[in-house]
Length: 187
Image (tube, rainbow, N blue to C red; front, side, top):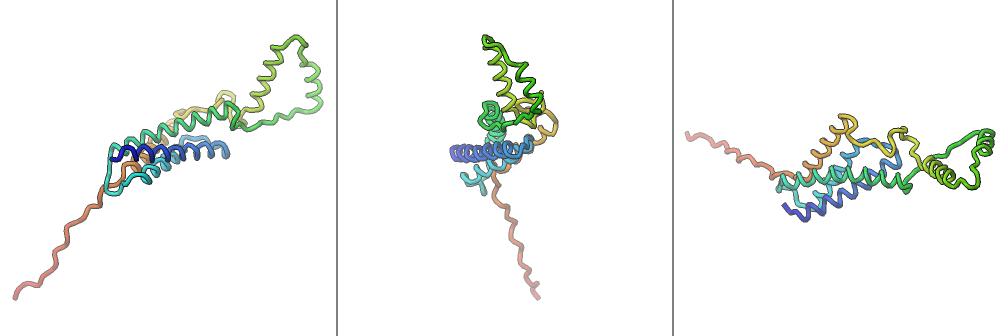
């Protein structure tokens, strides 16, 4: 089964899958469970690159790959969520207000000099507004977890099966017995 090579290949492929998932989510805003299939393909190809799978099918290697596919997808969503929450990958949202309304609000909303708590709360609210994801609904921050719909479960199952098949490998090609040659009947 080559357990060491399987784990190394799955970890390398999983890391590539995590990087691809974060890049797709960050640059396109596409945040669907179907991205687990991308992670599954990259993880399975990582296993195939490290292990000789042709003619050496291993159900255990396939199961390990499927488990690591799901772990890589879950880890990628958590890593991306933390990167956005901490502001490392946050997209700045510019809030535009009309100039006249902004002048009136600035004069009325000025806290007293001794009200440091109000200033700190206002600064925190402003920071959250600047780093908010513009595509997220108010109740959805930081993100909607996978499993919110039945189709998310379907995507996860397909991803696990893709990872399993790529990691398992293929058995040796079955050869058919040679065809008997036609010999002429004796006369």
